[in-house]
Length: 127
Image (cartoon, rainbow, N blue to C red; front, side):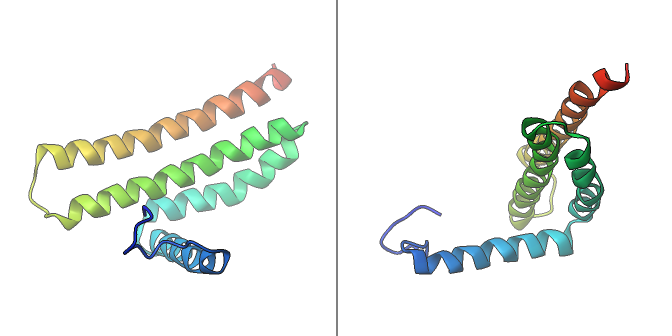
């Protein structure tokens, strides 16, 4: 939310708690309403500790776990785009389809990024 005179955006350290509350509400909504987000959280819960264990350096661990975090981030953004599109109606529209397809493509590209990062780091050890 952009700062303006009528904005509810936090402008002091004390109002950061309000922003944190909104963020946690967004995560709770994602968990409650989005089955893909829940699946990705389950995968993260399994793969993140594995990535921390398999990474030999801090950089490798950061890449292995960070690529998984990116999937969660983009899934939340995709869900937000879908919610906004659905807000304006359920009838078919080319732009609505395009927005939803692009959001899905962004998640797919993040999934490919995970495969690439994990493959480039871990495959040379086993080949």
